[in-house]
Length: 316
Image 1 (tube, rainbow, N blue to C red):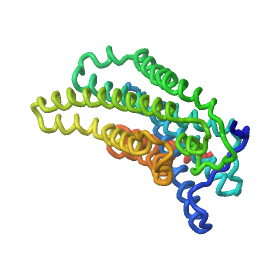
Image 2: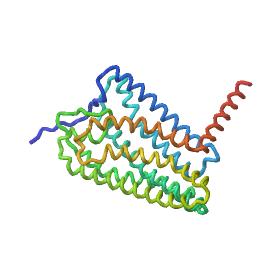
Image 3: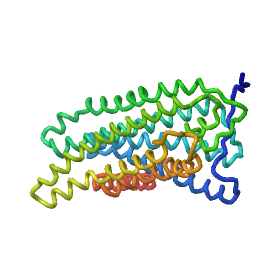
Image 4: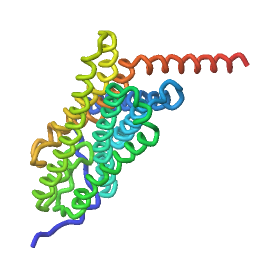
């Protein structure tokens, strides 16, 4: 018989014990989080208020920004609080909640990126039928489908995780509640759960990646048939931002999660997790705005309106 302890609180190790490094890390994470939230909120606002950004492409971009804000908010503020207060404890329920939302939002992102690639496929390969195929109802169904599929994928292994038993160790070797370090400290046999999660992760990544590759195969074939070099350049520019974000998202996820043994390589994953939860959400708004003339113009117009209204208020 093994003596298991009912764990109600976990202790998060964090990234470093060096006080000076912690200060630098706090400043870095705070600034990246602030830039991420502000950048994505600007995209959300622009796509809501600007009449030129009411197309399906910007509908998906807005919801992708909402996912990015939600994802980084689930991870970073808690870590900032831990570093500022020195309180590195987290309750079992809070840890489970954070892990659930991190995984749900991450999986939803992959399916939303797939929907965005299909949107680009219809826009470039079937431009005359674009508004008919990608109408408002279809876009909403795609969005709801992304969340529903993510729930279907995540709930079974997450439910199995509630059956895990813990010994006398409640120290999570991470800055947040991630699956790998939690599995590392459990006393239960996690082989089946790890393999189950591995299979689900591989199938999710392969399915979404194959769909994206198929979309862009047709897109590239169509673009290469365009008679004008200017048309080809414009068509490629509308897809380049999405391809860049897809590359970053899939690259980091494959590095972190696609491995059969969760009890190995946790240290390296902590560093990559920081980059995934802080740097990537900052980069995405800039990737989409700097490469998109419509978004840049909408941003300039919004600044002009704000400046005009501010001047008007001062005149009163």
